[in-house]
Length: 338
Image 1 (cartoon, helix red, strand yellow):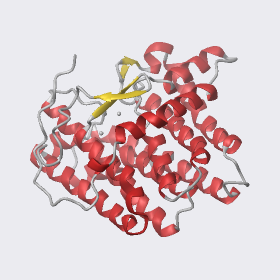
Image 2: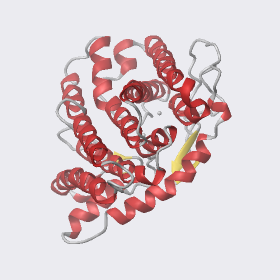
Image 3: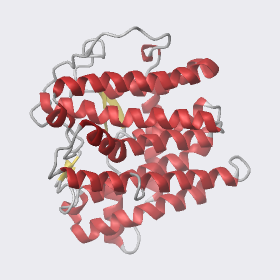
């Protein structure tokens, strides 16, 4: 039984012409998640060597996973009128690389986390050796899945598939999420200033959301300018989610879900963290306004991701989206992201 979090008190803002109140993200999420789970289940079978593959399945097939990277990818593809089924291989691949990054983040030499989403982390259940191998194996499996399952060149041009592969490689590589984890390890010994903290959060948490939005846009045939808009939007949403988690962690005496040595509240103070929440919320919404002029209400799913990052109005359990007990669902950004 989870206690409700106190509302996040952020300054009032002018209402936008398009509101996520007009869109049921929970219903949209639920309609997609069963398909994503089924494809992931089929893509990571138990085979020889069994222990490695069981560790991989444990890492990927987590009933409490929200599948935000996959759903943001599909939503971005939908926005530009792309073939939804053609976005599913990349969407599932994003879940694989996300799971791999979490397996490695949880290791004793990294964040040393024995629990992940209420279950034993992969190394706690299978051992550090199998966890390292499971994470290592999930990265190439993700790329293989895109190449083998994306309908190309009939639906998706081969050049687009290559751009998606390059985008994921960039996001998880030495200048992306790996850089974020490196900075986070260093942050254990030095708190850092606001600029350093935000840079760390962009790398460790913003890269995944940025990559998810961009991959969907590429698969939907977005223009280069639209892809860059999605890039800025996704990065803002990823950092926003982590900042809200830091505030909730502070409010619930450590009950947040996303681990980082650079906790924005402890480094910058709760008031400044809340100011940054509002700044990033508005920044993400502003990016979408540029797309809204051309695509209208098709932008609503991406708008609702921003509001969900703050409100956390539902939780995902066993592949279904249900009303959340973690946060007061009435605590929206007028009175107020694992």
